[in-house]
Length: 403
Image (cartoon, rainbow, N blue to C red; front, side, top):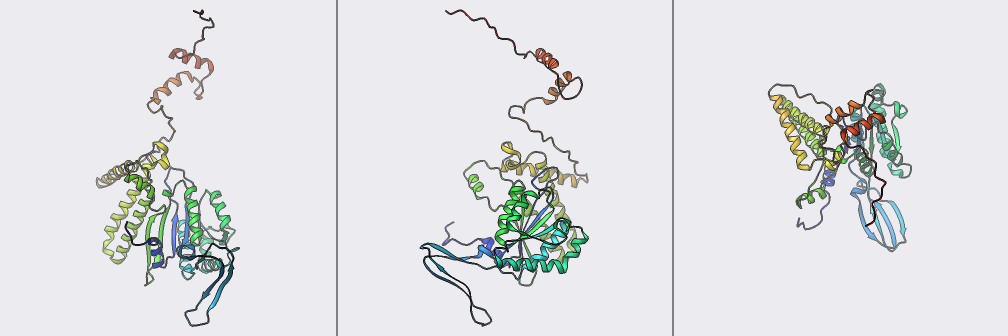
C-alpha cells in the first residue's frame, strides 16, 4: 500500500483510544442446525493491556531494570531487576490497566443475567500473581450488585452457588466438555484471545461467532464497534483477486452489520422519540435479513464450511440470501404472513446418486418389503434381482481349447 512505515493494528488503536472495556464474543445459533454448543456461550475479553501493548527490545548480556516513576512526584520504584546471561534475547515490558475492570464486570454480569447463563472468571493468578487484582475486582462487583439476582434466577447451581474462578488451563478443558453451553466467561486480553478462538472451533466455524468492541468516550458514554471475529480473511480476498473460486461464510460479518444497524437505530431513537417508526422499520429489516440468512443454511444451501465440497461459493450464497430476503420483504409488504418453513431433508447423498429417482426406488423396494420393516429377506431379494435382470449368473467352468 506504499506506506512510509509499518503501522500498528487499527483495532488496537481503537481499543486504546476508547479505553477498551471488553471485546464481547458470543456464539451464533441457527434453529434446526446442531453446531458445537447447544445453548449460548458468552465471552468477555479485557480489551486493553497485556502483550498487545507491549514494548520490547532485542538485548544481549547485561542487567535489565524496570523503573516506575509515580506521576505524583513520589520516589521511583524498581519494579524488577534481573541479570541477563544470554547473548541473544528479547526484553518485553507491558502492563495490565485495571481501572476499567469494574466497567467490564458490570457489562459482563448484566449480559449473563439477560442471556440466563452462568458466569465464570478466568485467570492464571496461581502463577501470574499480578492477575489477582482482576479476579478481586470482578468478585467485588458481583458480590455487591449481582449475586442475589443470579441466585434468584437459579444460575449459580452449576458453579457451586457462587461466582467461580477457573484457571485458564482448566477453562480450555471445560470449553471442550461443556457443549451444552449456557455459560459465560471473562478473562484478560491474551487469555481471551486464545479461548475465544477455541470456542469458535468447538462451535464449528469462526463464522458462527460475533465480536463487539465496547469502550467509553470522554463523557462516559458507551461506544460499540461491531466486527467479524475472524478478521479480514486476507487469504480468501487474495484468491478472489486472482480469479479463484472462494466459499466464505459471511454470517459473522452480517451479524456485525445487523448489530451496528440496530445500535445506531437505538441511539437515534433515544435522541428523538419521534423516530419510533424508523426504528421499527430497521429492526424488522435486520431481523428479516437474519432469518433469510439462517434459513439459507437450514435448507442446506450454505458455504463449504457447513455443506462440504458441494457447498455454495461466496457469490452464490450471497445471491441466494438476497433472493430469500427479497421474497420475505415482499411478503410483508403484501401483508401476508412469512412462509412457514419445513425442516429440510439433510440426508447425505453420495456422489453419483444425485440423479436417482428416490421415490420410484422406494416404491420398488416396498414391493418386496412385505412386512414393512425396512428389510428384504434373501428370497425376496433374489426375486427382485432376477426380475430386474441384474442377478449375477454362474460362470462356465469349461476351459476353451488352446489354439
